[in-house]
Length: 384
Image 1 (cartoon, rainbow, N blue to C red):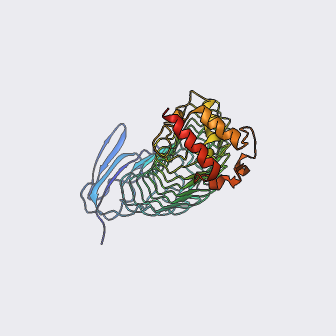
Image 2 (cartoon, rainbow, N blue to C red):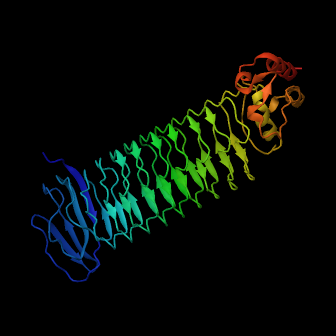
Image 3 (cartoon, one colour):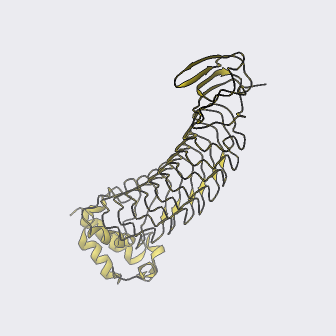
């Protein structure tokens, strides 16, 4: 049974020669700008054939069209349930495609290929479930790609590669579960990626690779559990990174390194208990490192991060210990005493393997032995 959908198409053809005639059951008007074809509410099961080449506006609302089996040029606004492969073949003048708010669930490989003039592609608010590699190819002028508010759960590697003029990529409000290496590669003008409100739990190293113009990366409101080194690689212009409202408990050393223009990082509302030495390196203009609503352990393990932060008084963090005490309230004398008592040189590159009163760093997170005694001293000094 055909599904009744709303279908609106605006077409502008490049030729001046008029072929075809007004379709049966449709009404047509013509002026200096071209022909308007009105086929609204005609119980059509497919798009009429042999449309005039000077068609400017084609109206197909309230019909029973479920597939598109004609080729368009230059500008299309359509609503339907699937896109057959090669629908857009040889549409070299096509500049904008608006497919928002349809029932599209599948995009086959080679659906959008060789569209050299295409600038805007709207596929948001559909039911797309996955993205395969080679779905989008040879669209050198594409500037914005809208894929938000779908049901995308998986993105194949090399799905987004070599879009030299793409500068906005919208993937928020989907069901993406993981990001694999080589997913976003060599998009030299990409400025913003929106991936918030998904179900992402893992991000492989080199997922984001060679994005030299990227300024904003939104990964908030996901289920990310850890961050590995080389997750954020070669992003010299990255300015804002949002990772709040996730489940991050572990951040590897060298995760945030050589991001010279990074100014804002939000890690608020995660489950971070400790921050390893060398987690944040060479971030010369970082002003906001938001760590609010993380249960930080303020024992000996906090010393490397506290020392790093203490040398950068302009950085705002909102960080608090697990008992609610602001990190900035910790007494320097107590922390220095912890450092001296345990022979922890803040410049020692082997701090992670150091020993606290005969116990490993892993064990000191539970306040044992001498480190526990020093932490008690630290808390006592807070309330003197």
